[in-house]
Length: 89
Image (cartoon, rainbow, N blue to C red; front, side, top):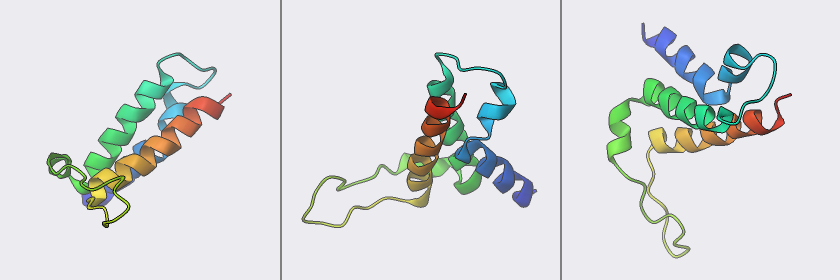
């Protein structure tokens, strides 16, 4: 079950929602769907409780930022999904 959950989370996170749900053209809400898919995919892979811990010290050049893997994979998935939503024809 964990392998299936991880594979489904990876598919949501890297943007495979676009060819499945938007097969022929772009829609105005495709970027929002991509962000929600990144949120769901990261939560499936690493657990939704990881969203309770907010990233800290981002943008502070003097200290190392503190971020957990749920948020980090959400950011990576958001970039991948928004690239799909922008460049998908």
